[in-house]
Amino acid sequence: MNTPKIVFFGTPEFAVIILNKLKNADLAPILIITRQDAEKGRGLKLSPSPVKLWAKENKIEFWQPENLKDGKFLKKLRDLKTDLFVIASYGKILPTELLNIPPFGSINVHPSLLPKYRGPSPIENAILNNEKEIGVTIMLVDKEMDHGPILAQQKLEIPILNLQFPKIHNALAELGGKLLIETIPKLLKKEIKPKEQNHAEATYTEKIKKENGYIKWLEPAKIIERKIRALNPWPGTFTFWKKNSRLTRLIITETEIIKNQNNKKAGEVFEKNGEFAVASKKGALLIKRLKPEAGKEIASQDFLRGNREIIGSQLF
Image (cartoon, rainbow, N blue to C red; front, side, top):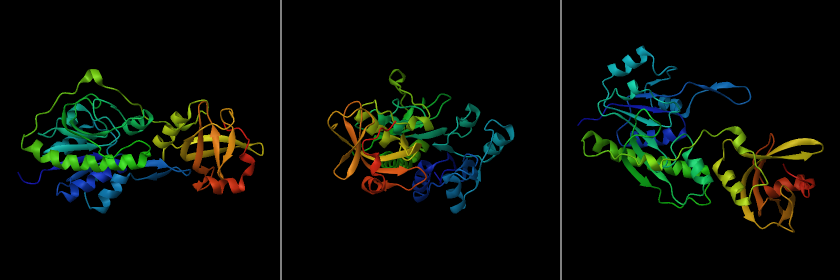
């Protein structure tokens, strides 16, 4: 079979890593569908998605449809006479009439070992739940979320315990891209028999919200530490410190679990080896790196030099 005609649906950096894999395997899409530009930053300026930037850089046509059910849009897709749709973190549910357009169907790259962790935040939830292993699934897409039959699945070989979200995210995207370029030729040659998921074992995730990053010091240190690894860089994990009668937000980016010192109460700050630590309900967290409000990320020692008054204070 000649080079297949693929339409790719994706939006964030995860999808960019997969696009690079497709391009390097001579499977670059003929068209890219990505989300509309989104408002970002304090000025709420419209910003293009990472996938849109990649499409421009690689001179591949891209569309940013507002309505995926629009008849004119669907007709334009049908007129392309494509073989396959590939989806990777697009960010919208695709209607059945769209999924059924290509003769070989629509396939999705999902960063979990389905049926576990269906939905929009599988990596974050794997970290939060202290999973010892995680992986990627290539599946045929149907009308339900992450529900379709599995074409290929592979576990990530590197140990994920103690790793932060960005490293796991990038490793899964690399693995997903590799598995995808192995799967596409087999699918087109009809060498794969799709395997139905065990729906009774399905678990679901929800979209991460900004408020999910708030640190509750009444939780055990191990729970807070996982949250800090899972929600870095977005939305970030934060706490509040009352400095000079003013509430200051501190974004905590890296920690280490230690023992509580002299039974400090939850949220109380104490010094440890030139850094500062915070007691929790069970144990304590040594703060290694943090981002003060409206500042850059710095080491705990550097923060402490200019903010000695935090020792003995209460974070909340």
